[in-house]
Every structure is written in structure tokens, then in C-alpha cells.
Image (cartoon, rainbow, N blue to C red; front, side):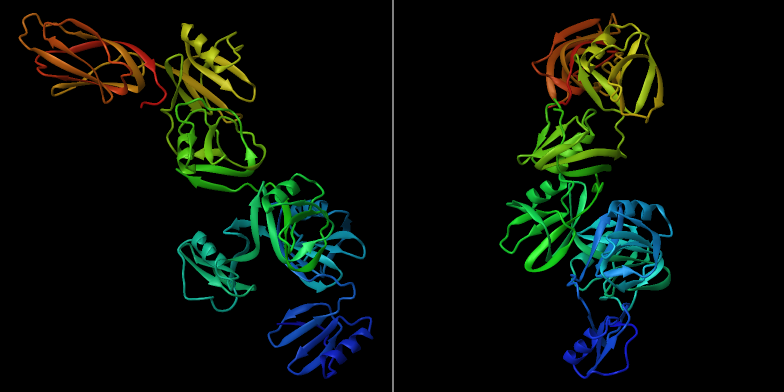
Length: 561
């Protein structure tokens, strides 16, 4: 399906004669078969031509390869043995240096490695010619998904030719997933925001309002890198051997000299230190892409950042901090004020307070990102009291001289005894805890901070009952274990009403007591471990009973049973 340029008119009759004629000329690039005719070619540029087959001269026995790489967040189409036709004069000794220069230069369309000079050059066009080297043609910012690497062609482009089939898809995600499962699919054309079609050629053509996503190489993501799989080739200069692919990728990711991982025909894995590839039947290799790729996804209206091959620390001491299901763990983490990550090890998911990852083969971590959930009512219990936690908020003003506390426990204990303290302010990067006064609330995003605001039962400690029929309800706002209740009634001297009152905390009965309109005060203890967020008093005869105040002996509970 390809032809070379500068094709000679003479027909050499057969493949052997054409090859012999080409070898005799130093400027011959190869020969082209058209129908039953064979013509030598003097040009190194390759063109698509369904009626031709090209045989390219390969004196240096270079491997013919084509794959895509993730480097500096961009999609790069790599081909050999080619060089770009239009190269800039400046040369670079290494690929990383050339990548930095190309990404920062809008006129750069790619990079060529010229084997004879052992240097890298920036290219001003995507036009390729056959040559002793390797090309890195710059695409758009890479899209990684469904086992492949994808590049967007740009605006007003569609995949050339007829569509692969009659299927249409309502989202890009659905279309990319469908394309990844069909070997003949080359990419996706976006017709409009709700209509996507699959393509079957690698070329794109102009079409107003359209855009195309071209499928690149098979890829896997591991340890903040995208690894490209190239089937039928291995990298030269292999070194250490590993029992499985994840162990090999882990070892390669930690080595600055490693370029990728080979899978040998015998099933063993080796890391390699060369970028040169040779063909090997029954083998394959994973090429090491650029660092910095962190998979992200949204679950429970919250962004999560995924790190495979890493762990986080910081034990979260709460009633439920270990789970067997990932999504359940993620939902609990975002709803706990101090949880910053979920760590998977040994078949279980652990809530963690840490946000820094460290190397850990076979383990996984999800870091908490931005959330759309309203978490303003979240609290954490210190010293039997609930503290409302607001992330990235500065609450109140610092109390002079009150910033020498080593941890949140001692800071909250001091706040409880200080007459003007309303909150504790924790700046994680400064590693300081401040006692605050006042209620002024200001967003603060310069560093990770949490304001812990002192909260009493019913919010301000002044609990009032809401009367509905024969019931009085008291909203405690948060979960408390109630030990003793003392209820004050507006005494009616001559009332004849009276009867038993069933008092519940949450769903548990605290006690049953007698009250009448003549009762001024009733004090009683609750059953063991009576806890909940609401106190409900159900009267047999409420009459003219009028609850004026409630006194509690309580203990804050992080989560109700």
C-alpha cells in the first residue's frame, strides 16, 4: 500500500533483478512493484498507494517499527528508519533535551534522531523520508484510555474514507471504548457533541466542525508512566530478569538507565538499557514513557488520583477504617475530615491521613482530590466534643501566644479551657496549630489547612425541644452518647395532665419517666450506650407541659452505631 518517489521508468521484470539493479546504485532507495512490473526508486519519501508495494533498501539492517510514546504529556508517533525532511540546524545530545526544546517551540513538529551523527534535531514539518534514524512526530496532548494511547487531530478534521461500521456513539468515552475492542478501528471522529463514529484509516482530511482522535499503540499505565507495548520486538542490552511484568516494570521505573522491559519467548521478563530494538518472534517489549502521568477519575462527585505501585501512611483512628470494597472505602474517606487517601494492600482498603506516596510493589493508593459534596457538617471528636472541620478555610483570628501545640489533641484541649477560643487552626505545611477567636470565615488555598470549630450539642449548647402533637424532638446536630438528662418544664400549678414519657436517643430507649403539668424538673439516667443525633420524648398526656430547657451529660461519638 506504499510507493517511493523518483521511480525509474525501466521495468526490471522481477524482484531479484530489481534488487540487483538497486544494489549497483549508491543513490537507490529501493524498488517498487506495480502490477507485474518492478521499478527501482531514487527517492526516500514514502507515499500511500494501494496499487504498489515498496521494498526499501536497508544496508544497516535497521528495524522497521512504528509505535506511539507518552513524553512530556504529549503523544509522539515514533517511526524508523526515517528522518524528518525539514530539520533545524541546532542539534541536541539527548532526547530529553530535544523534547524540552520541541515542546516549548510552537513551530516544532517533531524530532529526528540522525544515526550517522548520533544527534537529535527539531523538525519544522511532519513530512518523513526514509533514512538511517528515528522520528518522533509531535501530536496533541495525549489521551490515555481503554488500553491505548490517543491523539486528537485538531479542529475541523475527520478520519478519511468511509466509517468502519454503521454504529454511532453518544459520548467520546463510549466511542473510544468501542474502538479499543475492534482491531480494524483506527480512531474516532467527533461529528458533534453527541455523535461519534469509528474510522478505519490513519489519514485525516478537512471537515468543518469535526475532530478526530487517532488510536496509537497498546499501552499500560504504571507508576506515573505510560508504557507502550511493541509486539514482535525486544530492546537490546537486557540486564536483570524478573518473574512477572509488574515486578519488571517496578524495577525499570526506579532505574534512570532502564529504557523498557522485554518479555522473552520463554515467558521471562528482563529490563533493558538501550533504545535500539530488534525483531524477535514470540517476544514483545514495553517501552518506558515519560514520567508524570497520574490517572484520574471521578467517583461520588469527587476527583481521585490513582497511584499503582505506591502506598500512603498515617493510620486513621476511627470506628470503620478498613474495607473490602474500593468504592465503599472512597465514599467513607471523602466524608471523614482527616482522610486524605485510600491504601490497598493484602486484599483490603485502608483509610489514611497521608497524602505523600512512597514506593510499594503490589500496592495501590488513591489520593483525594476536589469534591462537589457539601461537607460543611463534618466533625471529628476530641475530648468527647465534636469539632466541625472545614478544609482550606481560616476560621477566626489567631490568639496571641497560642501557637505552640505539638498536636491536635493538645490544641483542642487548650481551646476548651480558653475563654475566647472558638476553633483550632492547623497549617499542615507550617506544622503548626493555632488557637483562634471569633467567627470570621475566609477561604485559604495557599497550603493545606483545616479549621476545627468547637461545637456543642444542638450546635451552640442551648438545646430546645420542638413540639409536634404528643412528641417533643431535640436535634443534637451530631452523634452523642447520652448519660443523664435533666428536663425543665414551665410548671402549671393546677394542671391535671400527666403520664409516662418514653425518652429515646436515636432508636434506643433511654428511659421511661413520669411528667405532669405540675412537674418543674425531672432528672434521670439513660440505659448503657444510648446514642444518637436526636432525642425524642413521646408523652402519654402532654396537656399543658411546656419544655423550657434541657441539661445533658454527654459524650461525643464519631459515628453512631
